[in-house]
Length: 264
Image (tube, rainbow, N blue to C red; front, side):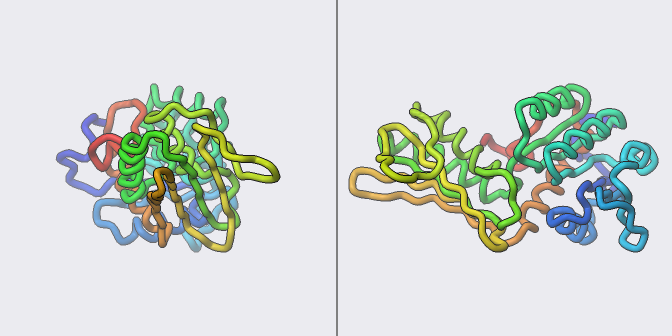
């Protein structure tokens, strides 16, 4: 594998997808089939092989990586399975794009160790709009010292981790710009707001793809910065962009901001 990403590449990037029968896996497979710069060479799922749908059993991933020789693997599964798939990529020397969220500190450490051996790009969100939201939030927080801040996120009723990975990233951005007294998750009973805190609210309902709002209020005014994703295809497109960009890179830890340019 040569360093330098997709510069000078004269063929589509060979991509493997895990969780191929899941919500994001289905979006990734459908979109990959429509892109000229991507060649889907492997799709695996824990639910087992499906010859009619070209999905292989995830338990066979290590030998399949050696056989199919992908340029990058894209993973949107769960923390435990994601760590296993990343380990298989390390063994096969395959760059990996991780969109899974909800990792424990131990699992995050395992990903960090893996990035010493292969290129690993992990992001809580692959939307270019969210990248813009992050920049706007940092600027607003810096420009409005002392304003109260509340972060609210809404996702479909099947999402497990709360707050979402994107909400946690936004909270990290806020705390990087301002000294706070901590995060308060939801409110109940006698709980007046304290100066310097950040209110955090997670909602789970229906089939909402993803909504994030950062509200700043003070000085008799309110500023609300919001992003709404209308389709998981937004995230799938960004993840495939990341796979194309990551293929052939040197081992190391990367972020979606590296793909779209500029800092996040």
